[in-house]
Image (tube, rainbow, N blue to C red; front, top):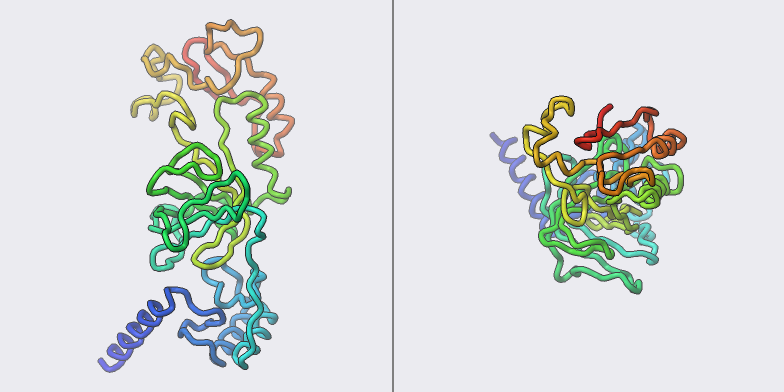
Length: 321
């Protein structure tokens, strides 16, 4: 009973300290007691000796020099801090592009792709001409945020999906509530792989190509680097402007769909431009061998692509394998 009572007191003390600190532990507070002491040095030494790995959400207090590594350099700086020396400034934004600030409710970590967290946000244009700011630190706006991606969710720099409380034309894109923050952490080509794919899509005349704009992000007071604010792909007038299928059509294989139904008379393949040989009045007769050739030649951009990407029926606009 005495141990339980002590644990409750410790928990209450921690919560009060968190509230007093605004939810963010002080830099160098490795052992989570809201103070920077010799005990933190011991904890950090043990962490380095045991091969602790940096994690973008959990390591901001231990990554003393902000190099996204947990190593002896952090120990040296922490010793200086305990001795009373001022720590060097953490890496910060470049000042050459807009900065998006996001503070999750209670400064909770974003560790789920299914559950949204409520958050405050604002966008500072950093004085860049033609870019609009939204909100401010004194008057933030509301959003919900969660993780996204498959493989990209497993890497150190995480991507996010955001849902604004109100529609906003962020960075000159069409006004909407739904956006993504793409890290492109798996892109070793100067963050150009997605940009090249999007540009190819625009040049071949696809009816919709997602917009993305570079932005730097500060999450819960920690600078987490360069991201790309991108439109979330979804059906809508200014996004994928198609007629939605009903539930029966969504669940069925193309061969079993009644192509005479009204929702299939407007072809799903309207995105792919007609060739010169196609009659102007027949949007469903689409010849795309040239597009397939381009994609096959550039298969390094889209892994596992097959030359037989799709065929298009002359009656329903249905894509088949």
